Image 1 (cartoon, rainbow, N blue to C red):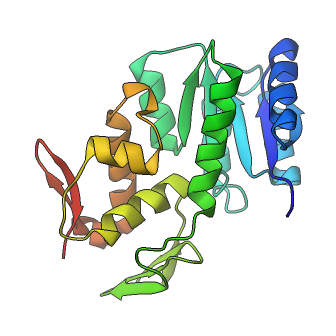
Image 2 (cartoon, one colour):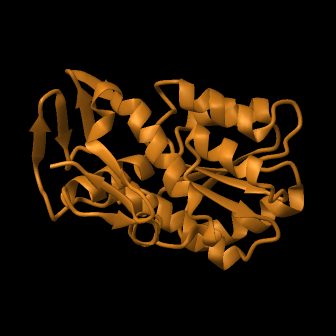
Length: 228
C-alpha cells in the first residue's frame, strides 16, 4: 500500500518542522512549500493526497492558492485543510465557498490535526456500502465505487467531502438528515461547532447539480433530504 502524501504550505519554518514531524511519525510522506507560488508548483508536480494550506502566505495568500487549485482539472480533486490564526466568520465562509474540506485555527494540537487529516482522507477513500454500485435518475448518474457523478452525461467534479455529503443524502432519500447528523457522519466531528459549513456545502452541491439542484430539499429548522 502506497504512503499517502501531504503537501504542507506554511511560511513559518518551526511550524513546518512541527507538522512534518507529526505527520511523518503517523506514516505520511510530507512535501513542503513556504509561499503561494511554490505551493501551486508543488501541488501540480507532486499531486499530493491532501494539502495543509496556511491562510496567510507571502506572494499569493492561501485563499487565492485554493481558488486556483480548485479551478484546475488536475488539482481540483485534492482535499484542502486550511490552517489559519484568524477565526473570523468571513474567512471560514470564503474558504468553504472555495471547497476547503476542513478549517483548523492556530494554535492547534498536533495530535488533533493528524486525526482530522486522517478523517478528511478517509472521506475520499471509503467505499459506500449502504447503496453499492450505481444509481441514476433522469440526467443524474452516480457511481459509488468510482466516486463519480454525471449530469446529463457530463462529469461533475466533487471534492471528497461533497461526494460524501451527496452520498449520505442520496442513501437516505426521502428522510431528513439534520445538520448535526451530517456533521457527525460526513465530517466525523462538529467542525469546531461551526454548523453553517453544512449549509455552505449544500449550496455548492446545488450549484454543481445545476438543473437537478431541487433534488436536495431544505426542511426548515431541521436539515436536508434527497427528494424521492
